[in-house]
Length: 363
Image (tube, rainbow, N blue to C red; front, side, top):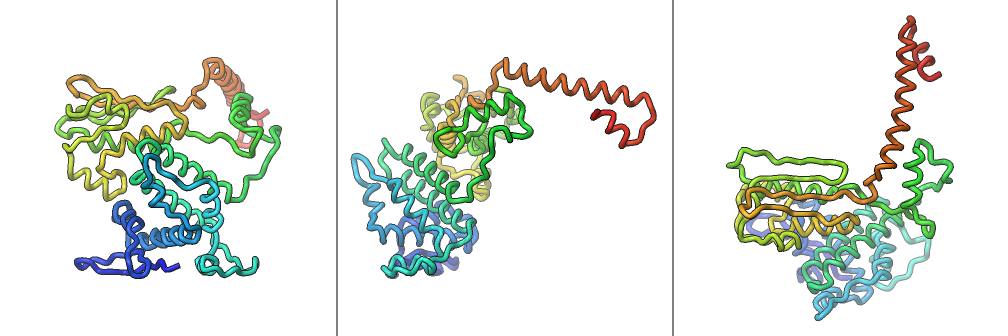
């Protein structure tokens, strides 16, 4: 299709560049430069290979994605059917796709597929690239929803492409208590072979919250960062609070932008570890990840003196057990443990070897 990856040298450094008819393709190269520049050269080339496959697909389907995204007042994004067609192509070998995209129609037996891991890496790389494009080029009113939608659709299609899990009857749910079995049946959908999946605290939200505390705290203050978890929420407390130029209302909406940095060297270190971008994207990501998980919105707190900054991540409602459920589970566990302890104490009155002791406790 005309897309190739070449190597160039700039100021003594080697770079991999995606080109079409010897002209660099702007956005794939910009994405790799901004998002993958800290990775090894071979890793950058793999990302460009995935971008090459996607650009070939767009050209084959006559999709002008950049023009769509730059339309105003509302951008146009990839449809679900277009994503599905790309997912189907992502499982094929490059040589097979080259033939298909040039108009050659091989026999069905000639279609060769890559490994499941390789196909998944392709889809995840293109998913992240689309998130980048939607965020940078989409209109302000719809881009956040579009980013969430494309990530959800890609994740679901990746799962659907893997071998399906073996189905089992409800009676075969071994090792679950009655309360756990009832809860599992509540989140399962009778109209599709898919369960509702969520986390008590999304990992990405925890990571961004902790990195934010390390990033913005003052190391002239001896108070450490505090992380507490209870049955309702996770809290991260750091000192001092955000800069006075940032309004608390803007914090709650993820619009905290400040040109002042307390710890520039720590920022550069965190960038090298791919833990931060240094562009005030942490709080918006926390809000987005919590919303995508179906969790209540996070709460950002400080005082008028900006002496502290507290982030509260509420636990997902699906993990918050009612008092009656908690009491029932506790009573069931206590009864079982008390019986075993009593049997163990009675067995200890006599001299027994290990086998006899185990038999007495389990009787």
